[in-house]
Image 1 (cartoon, rainbow, N blue to C red):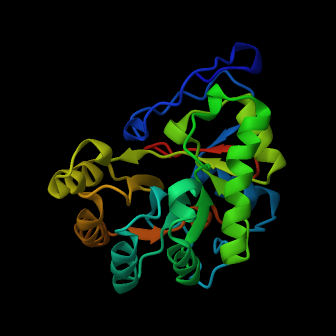
Image 2: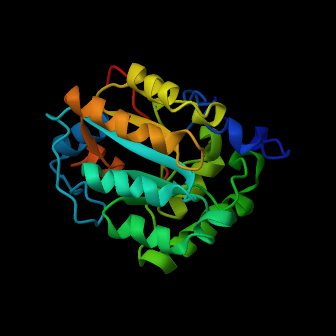
Length: 268
């Protein structure tokens, strides 16, 4: 359960290596929590269907109401291995969603950021310096998110519409600032805990064991074992009948609403 504004505490940000290990329960708080299936159903019921699932990119539309969809996402890059990852995704025709860090990543690899966008992937926000947002006041949360928004816009011509809070830690203040900045919050349902191992076979195994329809896979393209694991993950999930999509495609015809928390459930 995440903390209210009155219950916020301050303290040092936890290390990046624990980023995927904590997904806090989101019940009992004011922020809305929505699964991909709910987002699609609500759009159909409203007759809106405003999202094409492309995020402004030239990628094929997919009907995840009928297809067995899964979203591949990468946090905390880009890094030195991201070009190799992009080569793999291009070869296998797989779109992904990249939640990018600003400091020492976006600012260090600007050409890679441009390539991610140019090749049809969804470019999203993972804060500037990976500070734990629930340890910060509203002005600090805004700075962490807006600096990355501005840096990505300078490189790609488009501000992200999605963000992922470090360690999945969010609260009412994070939701309020995200809403103000036009950012939906995206969590995950499948993690290989690739920060804890360089064993590519183990990373692959962990993802495959957890895979489910409408799932969101969390990986990091900054760890040595992750990028080599991706071809095997993609090939096996395709063999099992999965269609890879970006997060916006997973929600379509719904659109990601600013401030709302999106997280799949295995029975969604």
